Length: 100
Image 1 (cartoon, rainbow, N blue to C red):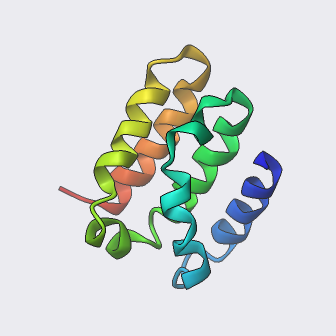
Image 2: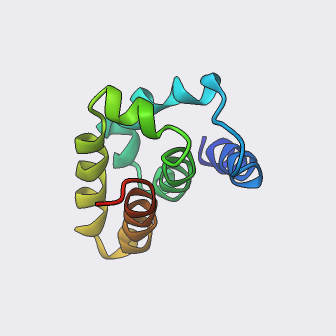
């Protein structure tokens, strides 16, 4: 599964200027489920996919109040030494998408 997420991330990253397809927006609720992040092998792929999806799904994330669970994922990732880099990737996507 992590490899599939990395491929989907690469697709999103290669078309960064285009609008996010609706099919990708359906992944957001499943991506925010805690069990997905408990397996250490899933973390890099999930973090990359979440970081790639955040800029295109800005309105959907705000409209469905999903920013707080995303920040919870950041908090969970930052608490582990092996997932700090992934946490900062997610944080960078949040900061660049949702300016103060």
